[in-house]
Image (cartoon, rainbow, N blue to C red):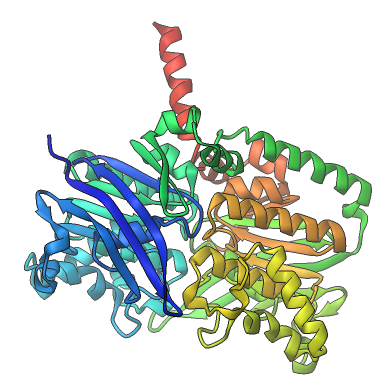
Length: 558
């Protein structure tokens, strides 16, 4: 039987500063009809370049040096530009990695979701608009009729990603290339989307080439796993075999760095970190210390044209002590990011109080806020939209130091120190954001946030774009900085496996309210609320454990 997709001897290089730099080296693999194949590896390993070569969407400075790509018996490397228009969207769908830059900001979301149906003659404009609403509903977007009429800037990052997924699946293509399709989604919606893609694979025979840094997702969803390092395939095989009996040292390192891969009990690494944090908390007696940040009765309303007002945050209260990490978790649209922006007074609350180290942030004037903002920093969710594309990386990190009048020599030393701390490669300071991968860009954003040695850092999905090994480095870095200087973190995340590893306490948000709050071990291991239990059950990587438990139970019954 001929494979649906066959890649043979693929090599790709990028031209940088007049020099060809290999990115993919002699890569060969197949994807069969209805099969889910995951390509995993660190940022810069060649995963996305391989995927973009398959669908002929490489950057202008990229060159396919050798190899062939065959899809359903057709040689894709020989297709004309006109012929590619018939393939993309109809026969091969792409879910791109970056939801921020992949949607047209001046077109309504519904029109963009239904566009593949119109382009490929599968529907007229009116019926495509109706189908787009249903596609948005299937992708997990609430009130899809109203949302279809909105523009991308009115969507959260997770909602934009769901819209892109809906557009990619609109024409029911035979192959879907999913490039980090759920990295911006909370665990319950992630499960819903992956279930939807899996249903297509099983019922329609749609094949999936899944590019992911999340080994938990690969463990749950892939039939086969391909491990890439430095542009080469170092290991491949059935998913269970690769994850349970890895042969290559690099694969073993990735698995060891993946939080939550072993299921709800957590990895040994997670347990060790949790014990260290518990000992540190006991020594510091954090609960008895003065709160660094205290939020009481916070409420935020937004006007909706012709529809009254939306209550995004309602009666939210929490406190963060010095050297403590509070994680806020919940589904997309639950109010997590809005709460974070309110806490830093980037938005003015409709009601409620915010105090930072005893200072009232709600009534503070502009000068008072500027002075205090040196002491708290924010790492945004998107590593693509938060860096100025005109700046070099050194300039990006240097910007807050320059804004607060730090001397030039001290700035240069600090920038060099931070580049090393966040494990960026030599020479990265002279590059621009477009020359870095998504994970590398997020490391730059974290370095910039730490530049002024703040007392509080708010991390809004700050590690969701990072592969597991770099994620582990960043979590270790955050823990080290906290241990050394006593910085506090407000950690916004949909990844409960990471939350279990890094946080002291957890607040669970649903529909703008905190429904459960307490020590991490208590909330995640003995939750009181059904909503919290659903979040925990959806943690990727625990499906194999659940399947094993079911099999054992079935065997015992027999």
